[in-house]
Image 1 (cartoon, rainbow, N blue to C red):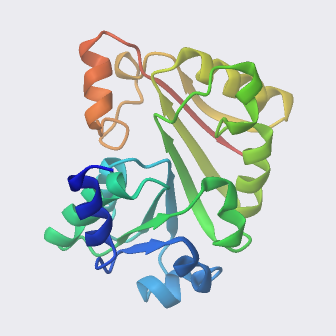
Image 2 (image 1 turned 90 degrees about the vertical axis):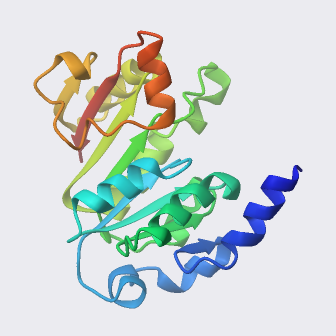
Image 3 (image 1 turned 30 degrees about the horizontal axis):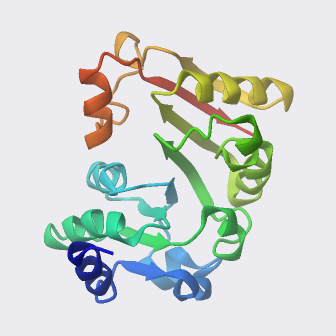
Length: 215
């Protein structure tokens, strides 16, 4: 492991807005009251990477609590450090495997879920690892409050099509679907947040897909 990664791993241990592995378990079902000290809605970003979307959402909606989730601590470091430096106090980061979400959040505790540019896991043998596979959708259904939304933003046409297919198969509620977000009517200030990687995709003339659905 490089020196920079080691330094970042050591530093996030000192960050008040980062919880690693079992440190997040005591807040299950109590994130608002016990961690954020308020009753505001809780919003998750899964596979948050450097946390750019999480932090930008927190800036836009100070009346909500945002939690970025990823297993790679050296990536989380960037978003967590930015939030601390800018006193964005309605954001936290949780370093866990996403498949273990139900160990960290209670039933109907979450108001909304964002999945932004996840690994599409294109091989058929890795379907269960896709963050919009039925295996994960079952978890989201338990975590979300009635009427809570899942948002998928991706440059991968295959993952977008796969997710749209699962929405139909499972009889979920499809609210928005577009294969060309920035040529659509939906590109508001929230959906126009661009991460480092999304900017690269756009420079390569990749289209950006977006789906919004609920259970």
